[in-house]
Length: 357
Image (cartoon, rainbow, N blue to C red; front, top):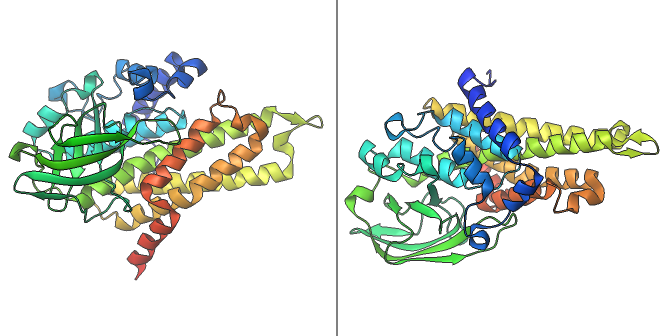
């Protein structure tokens, strides 16, 4: 398959890159590391993306968006990851907009997506205590009432709407609805994350996504995570390659040492494999093809290979990698959070094995 970017995808990548390169310097990127709770806002990185029209890209044209599809959204997330930007982009576009475009009616889209072009945040409550992306959630929905606990919900306090997977339905709930309780939880990269408890929350028929299932939402969410992780690994590789090419020891660039070159080669192999898996998943989902096997492989490669890659990049940076004013920590810490979101390498390997048995 030819997974090179189409003209539309390249234009989208250029827009995101232009915004991040033009408007955001190192000081701004560091300011974006603060959580919404600490800063009282979503930060300058998200503001710049909104001003550049990035969140509006997948929103239907009738809602003043550009109406691009899943491949273009994946391109956005890859470029955001490549720059190591910590923003609500994954939560809003990957966990919110993409599932709603796929599963919601036009009337529901008009309600839930109207605020996105102006910077409105969406998110999804998918994980449960001890279970990552369950296809059969223990959260219950019956007689118009939602009850259960979801963990690792990004930007829940800032979100206008939360997509929630339950045992018998997929529903959309406001974080301000009666019976919704938010408890802030720590993350490695400092982004906003919550445990959300739904205590007999009333959900109207207009907030139920007819025909939607948790497995489908999980597929789309994993595809978005894959695109973001693809960018993170590629960005860390580029950052490390540039560093060792310019850092000299014994009068020679570190990149000329055989051991350094060999370690970078291992990082490159992992990066290209994740890139291929991520793009294959997006292509299959966008074409309506079966993507189960590719999704399981993608999840396993992210959880098992991305963390060691980040360790290698840290090692090759020496002490510089531990400097919080240097961007390496953003890539590493975000990969740690994504690995936790996916349930870790053992869980992902079990899912791959289940497909083979």
